[in-house]
Image 1 (cartoon, rainbow, N blue to C red):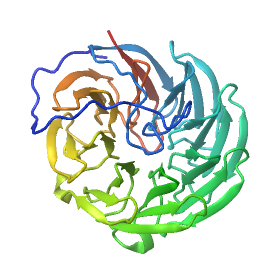
Image 2 (image 1 turned 90 degrees about the vertical axis):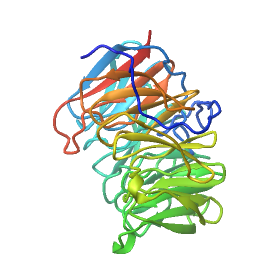
Image 3 (image 1 turned 180 degrees about the vertical axis):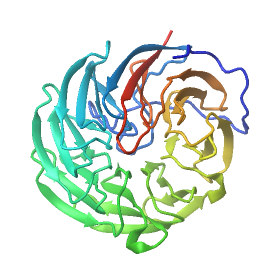
Length: 384
């Protein structure tokens, strides 16, 4: 493990300034992948702004490729080792663990004292957050890599079987199901004003992606729009637009009401992560190892900062800082307005999970192995 240090030189382009963003959850006590129901990447925070220090680390028997959630002094996460863990937020000591039928590739959601997480066995598990006891389970036809969303007493989650499911959050009863026409891989439903948005990968055998807008009350499709390639990542909803990345490397912006495309970036830009959106700016990692900041209004590049030789994680935004993890295990903090680096930290392990920022600490899962081999670590990194 190397000690934390400041970066002396960075290459970036800065054209305009970005107002301060405010991290938030979607409602009191609820925590979801990408920070909120809109999946904008805005985290509860606050985040460390000074030189980072390792507070603790926890080792699982399999890779940790999903984000964690932290609430009421406990950090929850899943691993490829088939376990869902509850850890003490201050020390990293295990409170309990829940054994599933397969590994977790779905970041858990927290709502009203219950954790919801999808497994590679196609099961959506509802687990009591205090005790680790199973409340109920729902079985899809194929793995669940989509992270759940809970709104108005219903849970929504996609499956590799191509279906978007609506379940009663209290007992897991199926309310409706919508077939996307393709496969729903890691795309998690984003919710705004009673409408859900989710991406499908190569529907109907075509080499294109499909973004669907769904009436959450009935499960009826409102519209769908084509992207330049299949969709692996989660959409984000902000300012009347839906932002989503295609497999071909383009970032698309669609009108949330009509599905009309407002703009898209060239595929050559190589955008590869789920977008984060805060105060008029979209942040997304590129396959060339650059973090990109683009205008949400027209897709214009505001700045680009290199932080990795390859594609890294999706970004987390807290206030004036944005946090992102490189594939080779470096956690970076950048200034949102300019792309200037604040600090970086070497975890010493391959990273795959998006960072989660809560109560002055960044949580980073590592162990980039989609076969589920080898151990994984969760690192808790705070400021001095």
